[in-house]
Length: 171
Picture 1 (cartoon, rainbow, N blue to C red):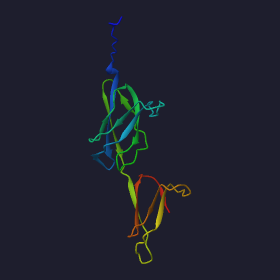
Picture 2: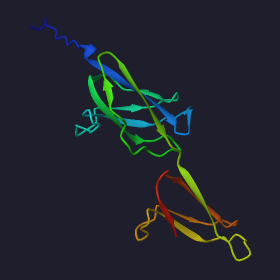
Picture 3: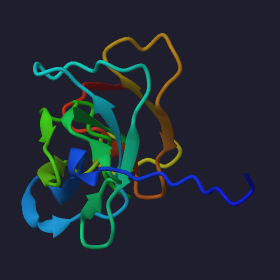
Picture 4: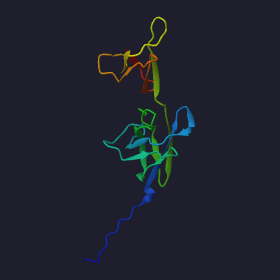
């Protein structure tokens, strides 16, 4: 009949949330806004068990981000975008256990991106303008360079936005 109503009732006790705190790796008092994480189902060994993320978390101005309600279970986080001036963490998080009605918490750190200053000088140690340099990830310089720069009037150029722990070759 047209007077019937369908009501869906959710049992929220079978759900929980994940709360992430994002901080600078060298100073845990520096909180990081704008980190975006994907939430993935995981086994107890920290391996992803899904073909797609089950949700996302984005950190706010206080460095914290909280998921929506997700079913009780094991999860891992993958950072998909980093705060300004920081590189994306390439490692998956440790396993996060979400239990009934709880908010599981994890702190994840980020290293700031690094820069390298290159100086081109003559035999009198005077800076040379107009020297062109390229930087490559790794030691193979046969491909497309990651960045290219030209020295200024003081003979220096700066490569910015480099990932910590990565080997680069400058030519």
